[in-house]
Amino acid sequence: MDIVEVKSRRQYRAFIDFPKQLYKDCPHYVPPMDGMELKTMTEHPALAFCEARYWLAYRDGKVVGRIGAIINHKSNEMKGQKRIRFSWFDLIDDIEVARALVHVVEEWGAQEGLTEICGPSRFSNLEKQAMLIEGFDDTPSICADYNYPYYPKLLEQLGFEKEVDYVQYRMKVETFPPRFAELAEKLSQRYHVRLRTYKNKEELSTAGKEFFAVLNESYANIFNFIPLTEAEIDWAIKDFFQFADPSLASILEDEQGRLVGFAFCLPSLSEAFQKAKGKILPFGWYHVLKALRKNDKVDMYLTGVLPEYKNSGIHLIYHKQLQDTFIEKGYQYAIASQQLEDNKAVNIWQRYDSELFCRRRCYKKDIKP
Image (cartoon, rainbow, N blue to C red; front, side, top):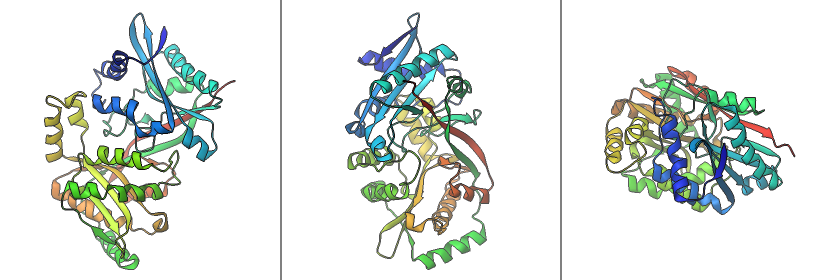
C-alpha cells in the first residue's frame, strides 16, 4: 500500500471521485458538486490562516482510501490547543488502510509540534463535520456527509474517543400548536421584536453580512467555532444564498431594526445532488431547479439568536412563521440542523411530532511523540 500526497490535477480528481466509486451501490450517499468541492479544498478563504494537505491510499494501483488534514492556527491560538484536524475521510473496510491514513496526518501534526488529532472537521462549523454513528438508513442533507457503519468502528480500533455528539431531528410538518402561537405573539410584544421580510433573493443576499455577523455572536460559545472573517462571510453568502428562497428565511429584528435572530432553510437538495452525480452541467442544474420548485422535505440549515436573547423563547416567533410557510408550500417533513446533544435548544423539537434523524460524532486522540 502506498500513501501519496495529492498535488496534481489528476490526483485531485481521483480524490474527489473516490467516494463515488465507494458508494456507487449505496442509496443514501449524496455526492457534493465536484467544482465546489475542489474550490473548498484549494481556495477556501480560511487558508489565509490554515494549512491543508490531502492524501490518497493506493493498493495495487487502485485507490482504497483518502484523507485530508487541516491545521487551523487561528483556532489553536484562540482555544489554547495544539490540534490537527482530519476530514475528507473515506476508505474501504480495512483497518490497515485506516491506520496508514491516520498515521500520515499524525506524522504531519507531530512534525508541527501538535499533540492532538480530532475530527472529522473542516475549516469551520458551517461546513461538513462529524461522523455518522446513528441513522445509516436515511439520506442526509447536502451539508452533511454520509458514511458506512464501519467508519466509527475503525476509528475506535485506532484509539479514537468521543469528544462531542451532534443530533438532528426530523419533524412532521403540521399546524403550529395554538398555545405556542399565542406565546409567540406575547414574546414578540414583550421583547419588541418583529419579523423582517425580503422581496427577493438579491435583497436577502444584501443582508447576508448582517446575518453572518449575528451568527458570529450567537455561535460564539459553540464547540469548534471561531468567528468568521470578512472573506469567509463573503464565501458563505455565495455558498448559502445561491439557492435561497426569501420565504424560507425568517429574520427577527428589534425596534431599531437590528437583526437579533434568524432561521435559514432550503428545500432538500439531496435527491437532486444524487441525480446530478456531482456535475452541475449539463443536466445537474435541471434536477436542482426541480427540487427547489417542488419538494416534500425542507432542511433547516441555520438557526440562532443573539446571546442576550438566549433562553428568551423568541425563536418561537420564527418557528411559527416557518411552520406556516412549510404548510403553504406543501412540505411534509422538516429536518433540523445539526445541534450539540447537550444544547438546550434541542428540546424544542420535542414539542413537535419528531424523531431522531441521525447522530454524528467528533472524535479525538492524542498524538504519540
